[in-house]
Image 1: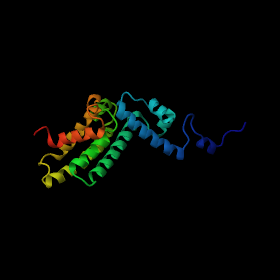
Image 2: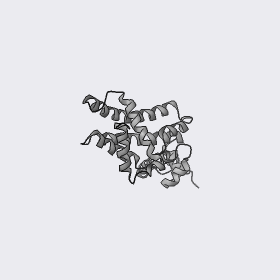
Image 3: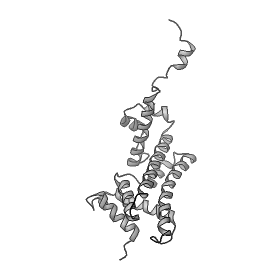
Image 4: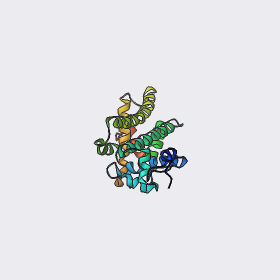
Length: 209
């Protein structure tokens, strides 16, 4: 039996290593999308790489082909998800209509799917993430707050909102939307749109007559 040439040896895949090419580009996107959904729904610790691989219908080796570890995948998935959230928030806030109408649009979109509180998820993941990974996620989250803060500042400048800390207001609005994760709160209204209307009204007007 002849020995393999150096070229043959160098191009051979390691056992279990997925094929390179267009299929891996598709697998990469699928893994990121699935991971972000699962982490947001169940939290960091409850989700394993094997579970993600099973949902994606790929091998665990396929995940390791793209990501060296669960923390690396978590960071990439969550920052991607937050980046998409930032773009959607900016788009909805740029639409015609009153601030109330635009915030209802943002709120309804965000509350369509129940997910864990971001701070709870980050506390779970904190022990596993590097300082750099934590910073990447916090920066992605901060960009969402900045989009909201920019629009709140415009409404302050035109006199619709009273002057205040726009970033604090942005975080308060985002935190209020997490109430939609509670089943008892969701059942107070027939639709997410109705719940969004009430929460935005509470945010903008408070409970004062």
